Image 1 (tube, rainbow, N blue to C red):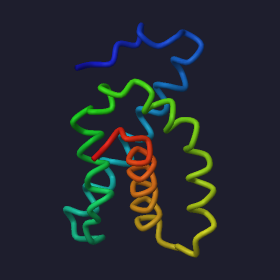
Image 2: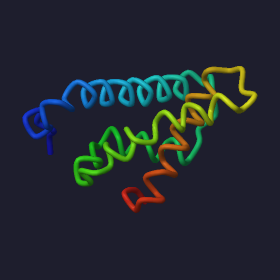
Image 3: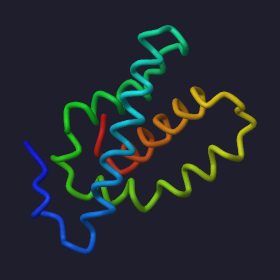
Image 4: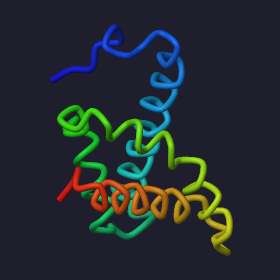
Length: 108
């Protein structure tokens, strides 16, 4: 499965590209931090990373819209926690994305 940019309405293409890059970068950063032992693995964050890397989101066309619509709220909520460490914030973001997809029955 692949995501063809022509499948996305023109007026949304820039936002869609930004979202794919941002989440993809977050997933890759988290995986590298885990590999380096900078943070302990988290089952929910790991499941979201696998879901993202395997491109399972392509099976759920509305998943990207749901993520896009909720990303600001997630970032705001993470900012409310007293988490000084950016690595932990990143992990928390991935956990929240996992829970959002789970709530919408797009991930197991």
